[in-house]
Structures are given as C-alpha cells and as structure tokens.
Image (cartoon, rainbow, N blue to C red; front, side, top):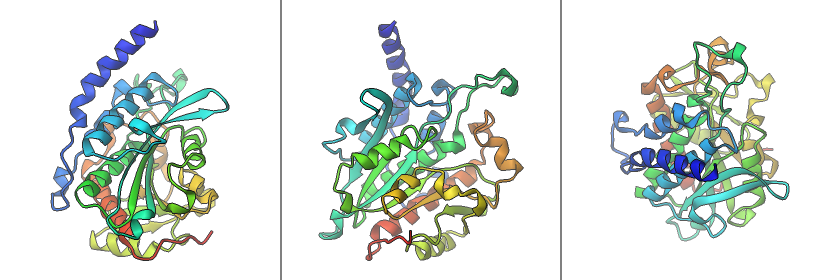
Length: 323
C-alpha cells in the first residue's frame, strides 16, 4: 500500500512539473504576463483541498520545492532542500514549511531579514453531505490561500532579478488552518538569529468585494503605513485598513505568530470593505475555486504585493511595531 501511495505521488508530481518552469519576473512586464500557474496548480481538484498532513499536501510541498529551485532561492542548513518538517509533540508531523531566501545587496542591511509568508494548506474534502453544493465536495482554497502563495512566488521571482537591500526569507506555511502551527514552529526554529528578523509581510485572504482596493490588516501597528499608502496610490489602488475591527481579523492569520514575538507584521489581502454575504459565500466554502475569481483583479493584487514588498525590503530605517 505504501509503495502504491509513493507511485501515485510521483505520478502526480511529474504531471505538475511543467508548472515549475516559471519565467523570471520582469518588473516591466504587463499585468497580463503575471504568471498564475501556481494558483491553477494549488487550487486544482487533484490536490483535494490541501489538508495538512495529507498526501496531497506532500504533493503541494514537492511542487513548491520545484518552484523555489527553479527561481534559484538559496537554502538554509536548517531547511535543507527548502523543507522544514513541522512536528507537534515528539513525533507527529503536520507536513512541511517551504523555506528559501535571497541575500540582500547592502553591506549592512543584508544581515536583516524581511519574511514574506503565505500559508498553502486549506481544509481538504467536505465530509458533510448536507454542505455539498452541486456535487462539489472539495475546499479548493483558491482565495484562501492559493492566491497568496502565487503572490509570494511573484515577489520571489522579482527579487531573483532585482535583489533588495535586505535579505528576504520566503516561507510557505503548513497548518495555518488548524491554529498557525506551521508559523509557530518556524518562529521556534528560525534559520537565522531572532534579532535579525526585521519584518513579516504576510499574505493571506478571505476573499474580496472591492476590486479597486487592497486590504491591509495591521495598519497602525507598524511603521510601514506610509509605504503602503504611497505605493498603492501609485498603482491606483485604495488601501482599506482593518475592516470589521470587532472581529479581530488581524489576529486570525500567521502574522499572529510574529506579533507574539514582537516582530512587526501585517497581512496583505485582496480588497474587502467588510465581511459581507459575498465574502461569506466563498470563505471556507466549496465555492472558493478558480472559476469564481476575477483574474484581472487577481493580477493587480499580486502586482501590488510585489512592489509593496520591494519598498519595505529597501526602506533605510528598520521597520518597528507599536504592539
């Protein structure tokens, strides 16, 4: 049985290998050329909702490993081959964080690290037949958070051509959906000294209902607010700050693991003014699939994430928090 599982795993990974061959990100390319292949792969029915600890998450991890390798990200000794095994207790594995980095160019700032993070797990397959809509039982997680991982990959491709002053760690987290376990583990097993982590640019999504904007959770909590407003204004996107404050959305993604350590962090989201019926229709729902997305807006959002991250990684003064 184990051998059959391995053969099945290798078969599907080989089927996805062409998706690893992503062209480099050129800052002068049009929005239409932003590569959405990672979004297609991660939200595919073949990955059955990417539940932490599943065979499908192993496939997703191998796919992301291939993408990191193709981009040319460096590896840490504590995450060989880009893999950081995440353990709960003494032996129970919840899968792998995917970790790589690009070294900064500034002789002083290169010893500081910006973390660009996004979780790649979701909820798996719906087991409640009463919740299945139209025969669809897969929580594909296109918004949550295949789009976010695609944005992380575009940022990495851009920095591979144009490295910033600071070094940048790229980490795709496992087990966010079951309590930020991947990010907690990463913060407890950092590949660099804790004092070197300057900022976390976390990318996560519940959905969108405003395609003229991006939403940032954590505005007012760090010193990067002016960067966010200024760069998004250049890109003709409005910044929506901390909607539905009564829901404490800022404390509901992997950024909370960094916040608990006192590391400045924001979560960068597609535009939403409030958690309305349109958001609820897709959030943690079998409706959250690729065909439901406005891909033109997805490209704008991803493009904005690239150049906001670039500004943060190059700012002279180290970001600080107001926790």
